[in-house]
Image 1: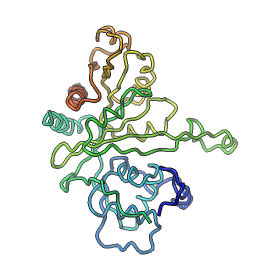
Image 2: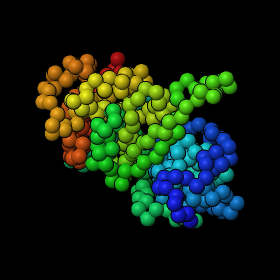
Image 3: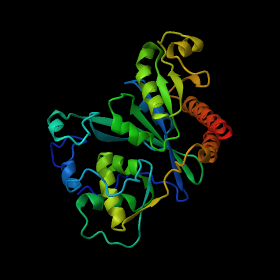
Image 4: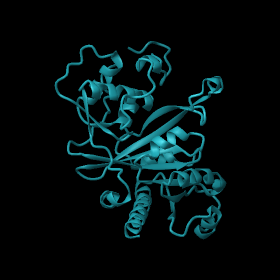
Length: 121
Length: 200
């Protein structure tokens, strides 16, 4: 439903309505590149329209939190609140985000990134 | 309801387990989005973040009436590197005042590429300053605009006051191969640096 006269990018509902007035997610481990996967099982009944849209976007395959925000045209902060709720309710699971334990553990991943980029030339 | 996912949504390959991010930063109109677009396997996406100006995040009721917010656009793209690893590239403006955005962006980021323009070198200082404060390693790439003054790299290195180890190279942000080579230089630098830290 796109009402006539709605400018591109303009949201129908204000952010604080979408998140139920909250500005912080229920968990702080979410990152822009946290990979989100829809869990099989929990029905979408009872979810708010925004959460339902998010679930419908995620059902066919994995996407990063940033991609979900981009596709849904929601700010990252709002997306994080919705994602955290959907994790709490068992609708979404995440793949382990970046191992940010510090420099030494990054060596393997950096080598892998380097090899991957070189293979594209 | 337009609840159907975009028809152009490109999902990650099933085996992808790990996502990493690199930042592409620089002043306004330096070519960040072009660079991300040249490399990305998906149509670059844009998301926005509503930022509270630095300082106003402090829990101070008296200060709330002075609170100003700005919308910062983040353009990003994706490069699947192998069966299990995906790289995200985030193009972000380099202004210091977007403190909250920087913290979110740099958390877990491997490093940053500073795109610079020889016609406006002075505008790159703020970006590099922010990265240094956050401890994020970076390389600098001059996006070679055809009409830019033909400074030598040595001259630019001196003007930007770069550390000897910081890579400085030229690139064409529109060109996939050039952009890939630029990222390779950055990641090779990050790897060398990590190796040094490990053996220190």
